[in-house]
Image 1 (spheres, rainbow, N blue to C red):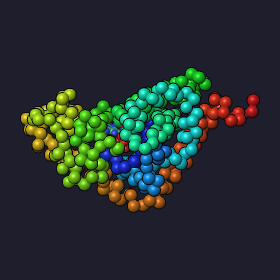
Image 2: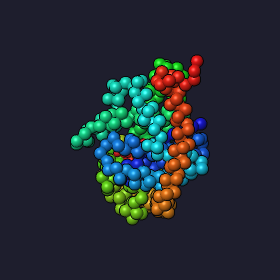
Image 3: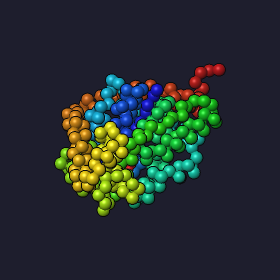
Image 4: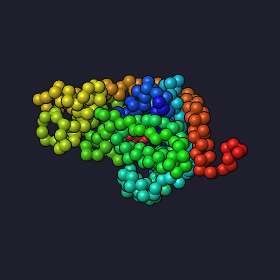
Length: 331
Ligand code: AQP
């Protein structure tokens, strides 16, 4: 089974990225052939700084390696190194409905936040994402719950392509974790923890100092009650229960039982200490890896070669089916 996922090299990775996506990548290496991509082209769809983008790619590479991705057991590469992604994006536009792109929640949210330019790239973001996955004929895509709609769209694109041009692409399935698929902002627990839309206090960054982690969790917004139970009108406490359940590898009901009658203060302190302990090895390992930029570039260069060999085949098949360019073989 082939597993593919991409992650943006934007900003600092947070607990949501880690719980919803990165930990699934690491686990995916044991279940199948993992291909993981740092999507620098996606990062150009909103205002950005070119020099900072290059640095962030290396930050994200070090983060993924620190989390446990092993370049001997998976392919880890930079999207911009494999031009087949952009070519396939254009080819797939032929079977992508404009109306579907218009309905994407992420486009609506992010375009509303742009002050100067809503780029065409932001609109086409899900088609590039479809090209990322379909280029590798991946079966499974580990992501957080916010990506559900984009995965549905890429499935539709693959199905429409196969119907129109003949069976060529694999229709992938999403893999969204049962617990930890949508970690919420600590200060505004009705919205997801996010790189671009959250405050410093509402976000636990993977590289936050342990003391900062405990402090942020102690000041997490909760309601006026004191029972540690999940409920629709208790989004703050429900989020913290879920976070602790992921860390302990238990279900949320067990967390509720353990903290029955304890009150919010001690519970938030316990979650803070657990999160700080959970992230500590990642932070330490990141510190060891980040300084050696040549080694990080070497990992990406090797990954790009492995990735390109697969993507080239798919794009050649797609061009052939679509009648683009000369025929592959003479009749
Ligand atoms: N809050 C979250 N809970 C669980 N999973 C999450 N993911 C993102 N937020 C949460 C998952 O992380 C992966 C990488 O997402 P990305 O490539 O979009 O990276 P990002 O831009 O840093 O992620 P954000 O925070 O979602 O940024 P914004 O909101 O600015 O776009 C994905 O699998 C995603 O589901």
